Image (cartoon, rainbow, N blue to C red; front, side):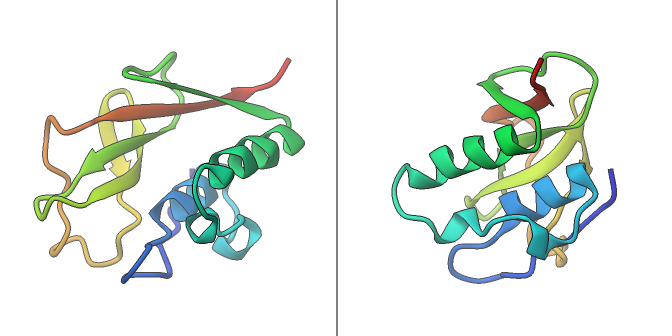
Amino acid sequence: MKPVFQAKLSGRSDCLRASLASIFELNIQSVPAFEEMAGISWKKALSEWLYEKGFLIAIGDHPLDNSFYIGITQFECGLTHASVFQNGREVHNPQPLPENHQYVEGTLKTVWQIFKAT
């Protein structure tokens, strides 16, 4: 995991994009801008992008193993946010101004586990 910070700080931020770039150790421009896609099409595009890279995604309420995963959490201000987690702990917040946006302990809503397709 190589920390990458989000480039968009207002409107629809790209925290998911930055979290994916961090896990895959890519620059943020190498990950599609899923936040710009309408409706549920971004979820389909995400699944297709991962599959092309040889990965699948499992969405649930707890991690399947001890690898890195994306945790969907809530900031103190109430916004939903994607960060990189491992073993139940946030290991990278892609928000470059964390003093304004802190993860609220216990607000992990969803776990997005990425794993190799076999």
